Length: 266
Ligand SMILES: [Zn+2]
Ligand SMILES: [Zn+2]
Image (cartoon, rainbow, N blue to C red; front, top):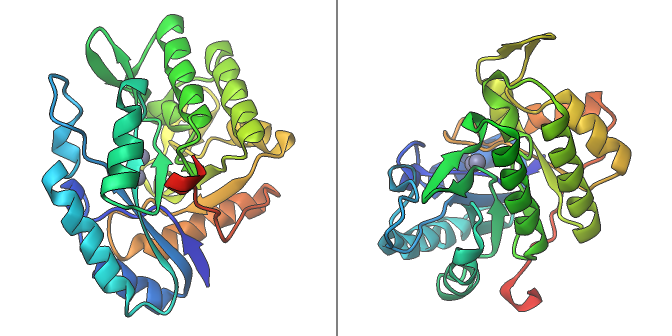
């Protein structure tokens, strides 16, 4: 019986299943609390906020409604949230619209992007010390915003086999300090463990979680949460368990019940 606060649905266009399908599977597999955190919509503006991998603004009320509906039959608490990137220009969108108008229960920060030259660039693909610095500055700013109940896959930038270097180490140190200071938990992500491993100079490793990162986070004593990042109902508990196994093997203590940041707390 374990919790999972990182769950997608078919609303993001790259996951299978509706809220009830995840709740049914989690009931079978043994669950203490289930949180939905599908990729958030963004307001229509001149920017390309990756609309191909997320729901539309108009779909958000239905997404929340289906979660509330399915939750009535669940034998455990169910929470409705969104996984959000961060840029300060959308601060009021996250707070007033996602938490406010759509009345979701919590927000997850997914450090997927950095905004540069009018474009959002995907973290695993960014190159160069300046851009990496920029990425981590935005990441730390997200943690300091006080809007997020947890940080998903904090080591995502290492996917695709990036080599560890001083730039990422310095950035990770800042993220870990911000997480510790603000009390925002960092996530060990089960999905990254289910994907094909990557080759780097030290051999084979998971795309994420990344051992060196978790060594640093463990030493600092940040709060840790272990989640699935399920994109298919069958993964909703099994991948969260995988993440727990990773944490157990490294002596990382993790929360099972996550305190959620509500709009009234901000
Ligand atoms: Zn993500
Ligand atoms: Zn996710």
